[in-house]
Length: 51
Image (cartoon, rainbow, N blue to C red; front, side, top):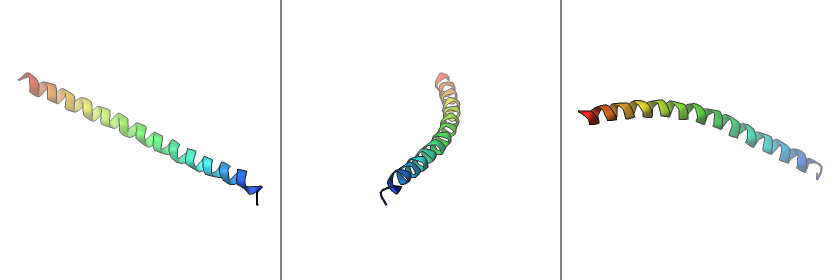
């Protein structure tokens, strides 16, 4: 059915966009978490370096 091709494409794009959006949210939270850990590590490293 050629009429179904655009609909399938739209559904596919929607699914891809949905997955990308969810992945971005998860990535954002993990990125903030990693930054906090990195700041802690950095502060401890500078503290160890000052001795």
